[in-house]
Image (tube, rainbow, N blue to C red; front, side):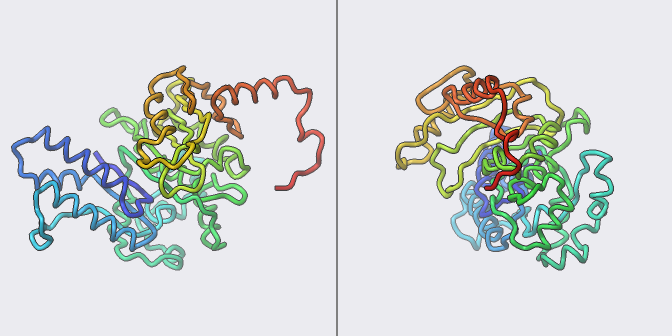
Length: 346
């Protein structure tokens, strides 16, 4: 199997994947040399990031993790491990795997094997190892995970390139929008044959697309193409390094298979910064209730929500009856605010 984090940063998700995969290999082949098993695990893990320093840190952290499981304590004794990381822009470099024939013209600029070396891309980003970068972003994966950036693009030329390549980009979009499209694009399509099935996608991302106009096209035109399976409101959880309200989305790159989506909806935020983030009250409630449809606690409620609700913009994912109250108000209204005004500002 293959896993990629297209926005790997210093490699946190990749480290977690390496430890899990090494343990699986060790259980399957208990008599094998740990160095061989470590390389097997490393061969399944791929990462890309725009920041070359972050990639260097991720590479070093993976090397240290591999040395640790092999019982090697000195760098001079390190085997020549192969680590599949490269610096580049996952949105611009590599192949695109077209969703439909209607996008042929839009993506024709990017569909050849020489994409990464195109002059218009090199104008913006000189890459250190173009061959490795193109190889990593030139294949699809069984799992695509990550925490994409949430910022808006300040460089107008780069922003226009993103708009050209990702039609989900709408108005003053943030990078969470095209990256969501790219994550599913890099996952193996469900109709590629029974050998592997559809690729899994998991990401923690800014929740701004749910309510702001920038997410309207993504929600109404793109999400219906994918089998979104879980929507977890993490805006009330304490997550180190995150000052932006977030949501965790899980899904598969195939057509929807169920009429419902498992949702964990927020009720109350974390009352204080927990000493151990993994033991935070809200996060623990999410972990304990995600598989208990119909459960409700002081912090979150979990259930199966109609998929059709998530194909309309905006989303309302407030727990404790907030979403139901919103629906009741809207169903009882004689008119909406939009019918009474000509325009609205920010």
